[in-house]
Image 1 (spheres, rainbow, N blue to C red):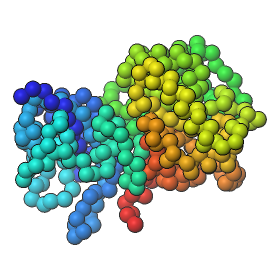
Image 2 (cartoon, rainbow, N blue to C red):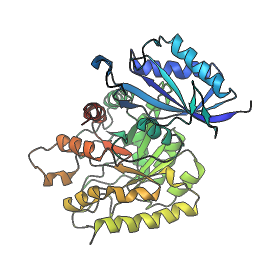
Image 3 (tube, one colour):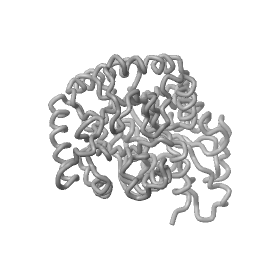
Length: 408
């Protein structure tokens, strides 16, 4: 049989869930399955029958694999069941907790309907979200939609939120290792503060700050469940160096102020780009969007999408960040959040960077860190955003799982 591309779903809710996913990927590769891409990992409640024991509701780690194989669908199913058995799955009890569960979601354009196999098999909301991350269609927004959390590491001495690691390599390593260990989907690393009044860096100064970061990441031993790495920069030179050092995303608060960013995307076909709406970097208190902020953002996005189209840069490689706090007053920022659904028809992913932003002062000035407000907004935005950029991604992942465990 000729090689066929497809998607698999992996899930584990018993034992060391991360190790189980890693082991299953390795075992698939040893059985004639080439794993081309791995999605971020989503934490979800177990899907159970109404009469299942409450103790079975053990949270899952789920991810999707993009694969290529010369196996037939039946041969792939047998390989999957063999792996499940080898890893200790008990087939005598349906819906019971398991070390590993492997499902064939799609297999080329084949349709299979038998007693043992049904393809395509994309009923689970988190499967559809996971597959969309590795090239298998668009996300489906709504109550079951699962966002990916982007963890922030400020390699700066003057971070607005006071958590910058500066030149402290041990502090940076500790922050990074915690996020990687907890399977945070995207880790965003920046070396220049964009807080109001911050001093701008030259590209060479920014690269000097990032040099030990690049060294650290080159020596880091990633598994197959590797986070996407994002470089928070508006400098072309830094963005180019980041891509050359294995980064996957350019997070550009400059909104293509240097259109050479398009050259990077045209050259590095795997790279993704965060387009942030901003009027100035750093933001200026007296420079605010005039009129309807939602209309202004749509006009901005229309113009930028034309630039991407001219360079044949697909919309699915773009994240749109409405730039809360960058040229918007607090009430405009909330108006934008209430209209988030209106940006979903552009074919881009929606990224919201609301964490600890000053617009939250409109709610309560007595909580300087604004973490509680950030967390509450994240739970509300989860069905409508693809990425939530936050300072405490591990806590956010845990909170969203708890939120989803109570289904009423």
